[in-house]
Image 1 (spheres, rainbow, N blue to C red):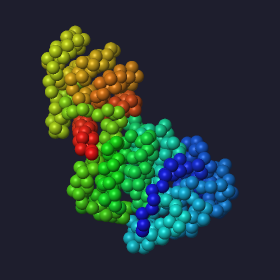
Image 2 (cartoon, rainbow, N blue to C red):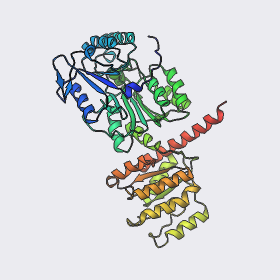
Image 3 (cartoon, rainbow, N blue to C red):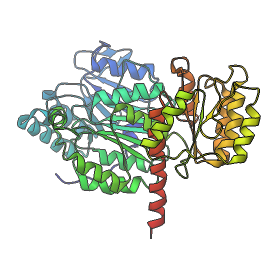
Length: 470
């Protein structure tokens, strides 16, 4: 199969018109759920339900077939079984549809017969230059296009953000979207690509790599169609924005599961890790790690080095954070003597006495009233002497004033501030707001330190890449 020219995917993510093939009045069937979701999310284009047995669905005129639609169609969503895909795709070719999403299972993931059906489907699509997502996928979420086939039964924040995700698993795509949104991430797009029969991970890297609205790219992959192209595209993109990849099938059992899930040959995990090192891709080691790393790179600045300042509110937090920093090869240098003295004098009679004024700096349960000012003032003294500050706080994240002061300090000194929300159940909203302000926020010190380490490595990679450019 020859490589097609990469199209402009704008009209897949922001289609002016959408045909729902297999539309249904039943809101719990996919063909009804998609329409209901688009109406609730106030999709601004034309929706064309396709169902031979209906004349109207959810207040929209229904058409017997794609060829009966009066206007042009940018995107066709095929919510029909595998055996009905070929004739539907033939109609899409005749209609001049630009993009299609094939949700059905029953293709290459099921063996030789499915592979032949998938090959035939692609051959038909090629006749009309239709580009495909899927099959065996959940489709897309697009904040600017206001389409959500990933979790159409739920309302997800649609305010556009800078995070893009590509997943070879509908479950991973759904969880990244929902949990990530709860953590404060905002997505420019999420795409579940399934079998990658046409558009691939590399195609999406290339598209989002040149999209000015996208700041960080995430992916879950089980197998690569073209490892060489993966490396070429990734190396190019990582020079100006981070790519974070969770590779499924790292174990023998996982590789077998990947083969039956999306028909992917998982390949050597060791080779994949080598590819990451050579291309600047940041490897993730699970769902939580993908989200944590995306939160980390919500920060608009990276640490210029690996010296960490710890501003904490309990001795145990200092120990846990210090151990985590040691594991990650990060330094916790003593603050300059004059800064130690200034902090000690400032905190005298404000908080209980403590020997920790050198780094870590222990605020010993800063009072709820007025305590946020202590954090800000100590950060003002600490941050100029280190490369990044890790702050553990039991309150205050919900305070707009508190977060804004940290944002101002971060921007002025061009050094990141990373937060750990102790008593996190009481600070869920504040955690999300902090991340949206570019102040990455975590529940546990270990997660925060792991991500600080990734930020340090990213800064080092960029420095080396820029210094070695001709």
